[in-house]
Amino acid sequence: MVHLEHFSDHPLDYITEFHISEKIRIDSCPHCYSRQRLHLHGVYHRHVIWYEDVFSIPVQRHYCIHCGKTVNVLPSFCHPGFQLALPFLLELLWILFNRFPLAVSLAHQHRHFITRRFLLCMNRLIEYFRICHDSLLIFPDFWHKKAIKILEMVSSVGKPHIFGKRYHDHFKKGFMAH
Image 1: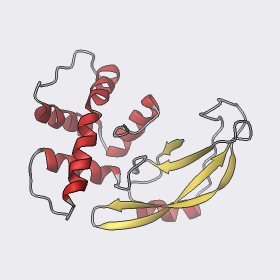
Image 2: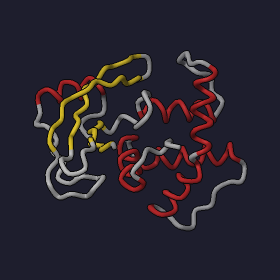
Image 3: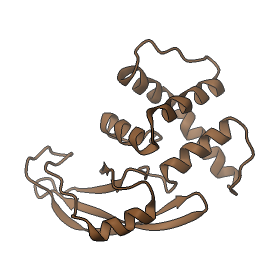
């Protein structure tokens, strides 16, 4: 399971902050809801694609002694299950749905996967905005215009990591998780 925590907005800042700052402690297990603090269970490295750069960032692991499951503490600019950083992913979706030319080289299969996954998860995004913002929101019927409106609403929340953390806290999964 993943626990999102806001550290910084850029992977380089996160890497330096990770080695300097105090480690995050998780007070209860999200699996079995045990109230005992989870034990620090090491660190693994994860790749994050940030526009043209690829970073290898350290990620904390925590272990629950009751259920034996681990929880990973991801920085909020990451998206669970994706290597693309959240700001880059949202900008990429905006470019793809508005049919602007891509500045980055991306394989056709990768573009197709990203847009298809977003379209499959659109109903849950609509549900999130109706629950958390306005229950009377009306969305266009055409899927293309609906996707653009959802991306506009995501950008109106503020920084991408704020939306990602709020959505993850509400549904306990990333907004593009299938």
